[in-house]
Length: 163
Image 1: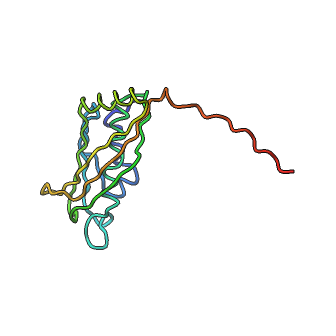
Image 2: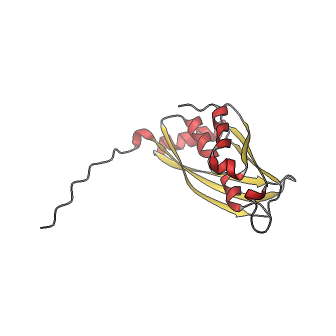
Image 3: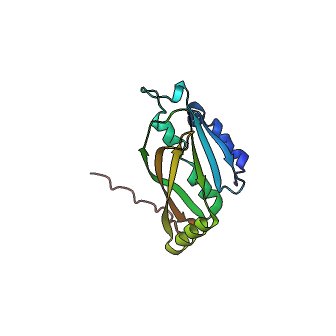
């Protein structure tokens, strides 16, 4: 099923996002640009009065995977594989993140996966405060594979019974 941008905005009502105050603010119809923000409130503020680190990571979590699924199409498996977050300064107030994919990036990723059968793509995301200062940097690793190269599961022989 092809998602329409308004359907992805429904992610605003997904409990982990709704509960932490994460909002998709802008998304293009071609899934090549998504802008997300997180407003600070009592339920996403930690003990020392700044944004909870888990919320800062959550606001960056699903978007490159969704963007690649939509741009590569149904012949590819796309999974989040790994992530690293580095906190740079305390996050207060409204923080935001921007996710972009160029046509060249999509073509390069697709060509690599087609050539090798599977691959990984890495993306860097900056979480910025209202002054444009970096609050956190997130590195996402996305696993990609052609569906036609996935081996069908084999049936296991039943285990021998002990006498």
